[in-house]
Length: 508
Image 1 (tube, one colour):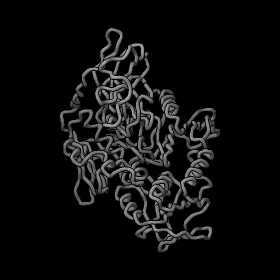
Image 2 (tube, helix red, strand yellow):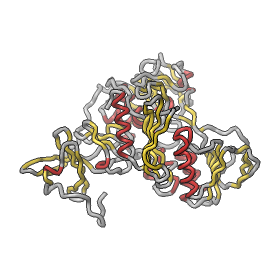
Image 3 (cartoon, one colour):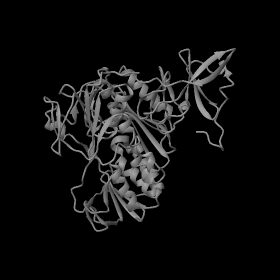
């Protein structure tokens, strides 16, 4: 983004660039005044859009052109070249678009294009209800309004805060490098402006699929025509003494994160129980606050079950390089006062304890309603449950994944958002199968690890590059087929892997 001290990159596109500088299928970055602009020639057509992703500002010129979209290299958001719309999360806001003209052997970027207003897709009488205020629920509500749904939308959340950017809670915000104003997905005024009835601190206790009603804890009922269940997951609680002590925390909500930050200001030593993604990201964030951190976990290597031994060893070495002390193949048996007792017999003093031993899907509501359950809420290609008109998305949904050929359930932010978006389209009658390649990223200090696909098991791991030098692509194979790909600083390879998987599934 341009500042007073930094001139925008590339040529001045108002003055034009030689047409030969932009072959078909190519991108270049220039500027229009102080605005950085991405110029694209794709399938013989010219496009000019904002140069940076609206999610975390990734440089789109380093991304990938796929059909009529450009994909962000950092977290794989998709944008329409024609309209700038963020057609696939994690980006939600559109890119700015400009008029482009080619004449006399040069390409010129002209005036800004007006954003088309959404067309209303219904007369306004339908009542859609979303249960859950996380990634899937918010993305569904946003997509419904973006695509012109004119009926009523109620979002019911048991949280005390409006939907937040949850990945930030274990990363930059917890580390103290991101202000709290970055955390909400939208400001408080966005919900009334978009006529979304956001009910916080509200619990749904029952669904009646036949009567099309929800029962709330306050005794009231909420009618619906279509329903999206996006109840998410909740942290697993350790069955040991002391987890109710005031300095012991799980990390799921904004309130959880605020509580950890408040205690971290005076803490000198922390124990993280669990070498999960949340646990290790929390460990990195606490080290950024100069707190001594000990990680206790039963595994031989951190994250080996997901990443395999090579990346597991790298992640351990990376954290140790930053001062984290590991107590692996061990567990905490008791928390008493400011002391954790280990199964191995040792003890660790801690002013702060973060428990990150995984989450479990919140299935009770769906199960009580009689929906088909099998390691998650069973949904079809369109994310519809066994009850017509009731959909499920996010951490609770178990869907038929055409990429792996299996039914899977994935607890990742981008998957939840994209399922919320797809469910919204299907609720509106726009039949859209869910075909997205699962994607997540994990940040450890200055090292991002991207992962695309889904491999619950593998019989071979192929490594291209050097894991320890932080420059690699790791492919997880089963029967010779690539099921998933992890990468470090190989953004284009990660994007191409996701496109390849989706092409196999008939999406891209």
